[in-house]
Structures are given as C-alpha cells and as structure tokens.
Length: 174
Image 1 (cartoon, helix red, strand yellow):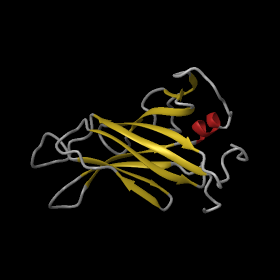
Image 2 (cartoon, rainbow, N blue to C red):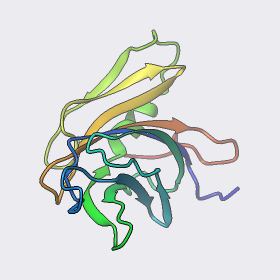
Image 3 (cartoon, helix red, strand yellow):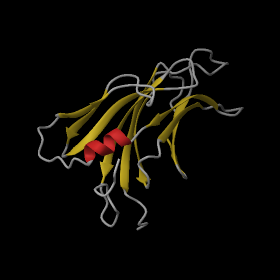
Image 4 (spheres, rainbow, N blue to C red):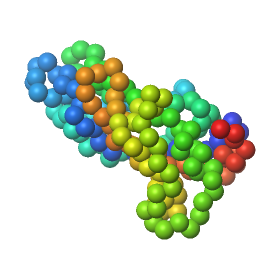
C-alpha cells in the first residue's frame, strides 16, 4: 500500500440541475457526463443522453494524499462528431468535511446533522451543505454551483473511508 495515501473518499455523483444547453443540432439539451480529477487521478461518469437534468447516481472512489488539494468536477457535453464541450466546473473543498470526520464521533442517531457549511466566495456551494451521520459514518451532502457557464449545478455526496495500512486523518492539522 502506498504510504502517502491517507485513505479513500467515496464520491457519489447524484444528479445535475439545469445544466447548460450545448447541443447545437438538437438545440434543447446536452449529453452530459462528469469528469472528477484530483492530482493525477481522473474518473468519469457515464453519458446521459439528451438531458439537462441528468440522474447519474454513480459512485467513484479516489485515494486521498493531501486534503488541501480540491477535487475538481467538470461537466462536459458528449459530441459524436466534434470535441466534447465543457459545461462548467466546480471544486470540492475537503477541509470542512475532514475537520468534521476528525472529531471521531460515534453512535449518533441516524440522520443527525453534525455540522453545516455555508456557501461563500471560498467554495462552490450553491446553498448550505450538511454533514450528517448515516450508516455509522459522516456523509457530506452538497449542491455545487458550476463556474464558467451560464447555468448548472451538480448534487454530490462525499464519504471518508479509512484504509488499514494508510495514515488516516488523526495526525493532520487543518
């Protein structure tokens, strides 16, 4: 196991809301997919055809070496005959979530809100985001407002996974 890895992060890419129209031929929709990147890792979702409010409901897992490196989500429109068009991007700031996980909470009632993160100029949150206790773990639910585009949001959840043989989060100072 790579001893620079702190642990894993499950990233649930749930859905897109009011994504930009990029398909000039159909003129009313796009064929969106999401690319998740962090450092040298790059993962993508499937393409949802002809839909500006796609439901992906896909889970991807990335290894985390540095919690200060944001996770970038970029949305693209799949084009058959030309290059795929970018439909905006957003960063996930892990620090508030990691600070929540580091508190080492246990045995909370299912669905308890552990903390709330407000949208501001330092994050891409479209509205208030909550860290909640679900299935013996802390999950952060968020709606990210896409940048560099006229409209669009992406709904995601993140969940930390400790891995035996990895450093974990307890030693980190944030």
